[in-house]
Length: 483
Ligand code: ACM
Ligand code: ZN
Image (cartoon, rainbow, N blue to C red; front, side, top):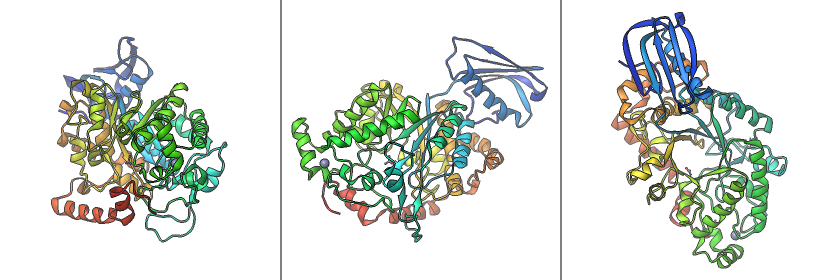
């Protein structure tokens, strides 16, 4: 027997028989010894008793009860439930394509229903800056717009915009009402074309460049040898901290080619003065300076796994493991560092079902192969990003993310031993109408686990689409200084 609840509760004792839930009186009790996210629901004839430490557990208990209530009739049982992981995140890329505030809220509402608790908001990248800035208004005038829709679209009208502080606060409040923290990402030193297009003097060459119209990895990054770059970053982060009150800030650190740093007198002087080994260590030094600044303001910092390549990263940093062929995240966790798993091959929701079928996403558990006993304790949880280079509207986003986001949510909450794919599939089918009520059109069941022929074709098409010369050049020769 399985309850029609997602994520699947961890312990259910059945006591025989059924009740109509709406005929039951609900009583709330508290127990200060329980963990924050724990809840206990006892359904008896005539009464439903919910016991939690406080409001958060009560919120999760009611989410479970609401899903049970959609069938009206519930088994007489006792549910005791606690999440497998403390971090259960979803990331939305609003830089490549923007979503409207109601669309973002609909996505959050769905993630909340499945007991996710962190919204990582990717708000700036090479293709656009999306936060209103009063301190640097030019970021909104220049960095927030590109000369066309981009990503291969022929449209030449300007594309872009940004979220006002009022809108961002509205989203944060909406999250907090659902016990969701908001982690803004300010990616640096790479993926900063929208900043450099606004302030070319912050790059090594100081040349004017445009906000990008295509995806990829770009060589112009923030200059690590220029003190003005740090003054700018600190000023910007002060404004971000004021807007985003939760504890964590993500500082990116992914995909930063070193070509410009290799040829920049200021960066080379920095390496000499700080006695750094090379440009990779310079990135670690850059990150550590920003982290020290944020820590002094009481913040915890998240960064993508490339930040570990320097070997000198501040070990309070929470590492977001997405693509780590050298297993540095595992070494980091084994040494005591905290990590969040957002594995590219399983949790990147912008890749077709042909590449990442629902079953593959569901059956993945975030215990990376080289983790030892200590390392496993240091996995804080899971996160699923939706990158939006090729996700232009909310219908596409809904199709790509649902039901795969729900699978990630269940892996974040339900213990590995309680997961079962066929059981999950049966429960997830029932989510269609609820999601539709939020404006989310979940992918049809036929799309979830394509056969081998479809998978082969999708993988070949995808490979062709990413084999663009600019990408190959930066990937194979990241230190070669060419345009
Ligand atoms: C990433 O996908 N560049 C984190
Ligand atoms: Zn430089």
